[in-house]
Length: 418
Image 1 (cartoon, rainbow, N blue to C red):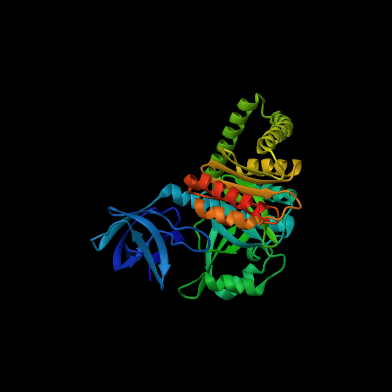
Image 2 (cartoon, rainbow, N blue to C red):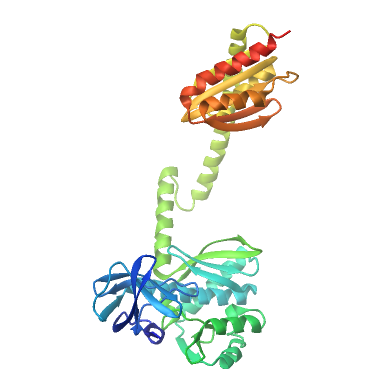
């Protein structure tokens, strides 16, 4: 079994080891070492990356009891020197321990227990067993940061499963802060984290939180830097909370401030005036949209009257193709046509692809759906509808004129039957 150096010293980034086995993992070379400082993905925390001699370590996974160091190229020597990516290790320590603190704070503030945790490339997610309010979340964020700034020692100890069960039942040790001791959950946690010798690894932030965990953690809560909650959403009857810590929090705030600065420049407003300026702009846009729709409706009504006048006798058949019109524009024009006079509207547009909208006035008996289906065979697309309106489209723009012409012929032929 591989000796896991990071468990005793998560700050150790270099080591020498012996290759004890060579494997393949998803078509890449992999090695098993007698000892390693590389963290293997588990418990929601991703693997470490770095190098073994001249090869890059692209993944570290546990498979059938072995720790596989997956490489971008083979290593040939039996003795290798490993270097762990230091910034990535520090980042994972900050995020993972920050999760411990935020999860414990959520219990204190909102009696919300963390049921799952995922440390992603951009942010960290925790899923809670109950829905929390924005106020509860902010108070938990404040509490977690109080513990960070108090620079409480973080210690690791190895105990037996029986000792772990007893310790996890204490007020600071209830699993992820369960409101009451959950023996089955604690037993599952202890079993999942059991090591050789039937032992369990416990991580404690002094006087605040105690959890069974196999991840890498700092010596002090101060190294988390800051815990910054980004967002929350409803998820499976509870809350999904998204947050970042340490250097990630600094980066997140810089991106947000940069976006706010750019927005302020666009709106000619300072930070404090941005919400009011944004609301004013939204009102102006709504008013512009309303006036634009009114003007469009008038223009479409005028176009409909012109097309009906060109059609001559009633009921009219209007078959027309346009360039650049959206399906919504075609529907609006068709609606004007069939409302103004007894009419069959067969409209098409070339706008990236061929669009078709067929409609008829109330009381007319043409099978609009069948007409559309036949037309769609010529533009290579699909669509549908029922009653007096149908629409669709296809990629064969060159077939649009023929599709409209055939549909018009079918309507006129049926109308002329005795």
